Image (cartoon, rainbow, N blue to C red; front, side, top):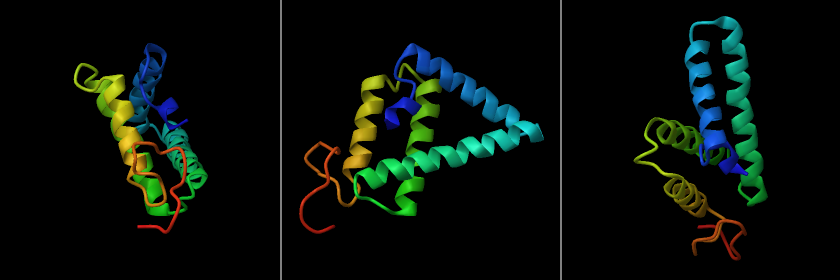
Amino acid sequence: MASEFLPLDPARADETAVWLEFSVAARTHPTLAAIAAELHVGLRDISGRLLRRLDVDDPVATEHLAAVLDGLALNAALHPDRLDPDTVRAVLRHHVAQLPGTRRDGGADAPRTGGRT
């Protein structure tokens, strides 16, 4: 689900380009700024929900995931020749796998058994 926010195909690349242009415009237009703030909060909301599905309930981890998604989207949109969809997916999987409470064997879909590290 987190990958829906990333430019992994032409349609999402177009959506990301619109989001970037909107974000720039929102810096100088108060009406757009309010909408941009809602989008900012919304991504963090969704990030938190995704993490709670992995039994991670931590506001810092939520902000970290949102920042990773923002950074991957920005860099994949600006440098698609250097950050291709497979690399974007691998970085996202790696990030999620590093979270306390998730498996570290390359899969991040199921919680680890045992205590947290």
